[in-house]
Image 1 (tube, one colour):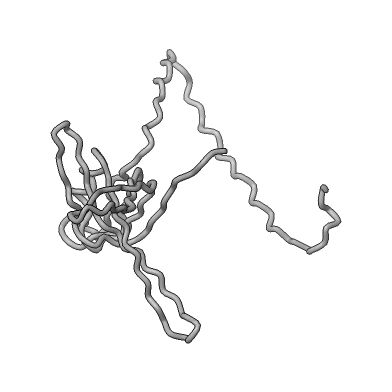
Image 2 (tube, helix red, strand yellow; image 1 turned 90 degrees about the vertical axis):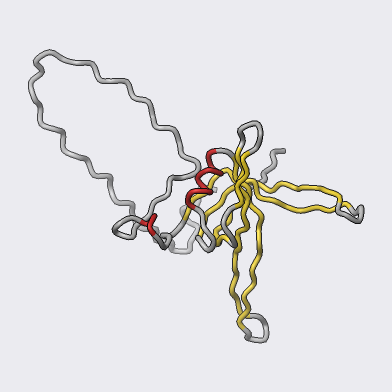
Length: 171
């Protein structure tokens, strides 16, 4: 049976990323992301519950995080959970969960000079698909100019009208 370890977070940075350049040339950025859930409990009281997640990005993504992520920025993270084990000062074995991100995207627009003249902002995606490779079209000699074909419109999907009956069910 296949297994899946996938985490998706949308939250805000608790602090600027901590970026380290390692001896072998690798780069790692670590930061905390807070997600907040708001709901009303049984007593009718409004409750706000915040969860904190430790996130790490590696290499090119870490460099993007160093350049663009700042405390308070809303961010989208996809990755997987990793368990870390260590022994504390008292000799007790400790565990923690960390999100090793493989996709990061800055949401919203930052305040400050990097937002551009119109206030818009678009940070490069931390994980982008490679551009498709296309071969150059062969050159033709003295080909007459042809008008471009008219663009075809796709038909509009018909709205679903469920009548609740099961007369048309195939089983």
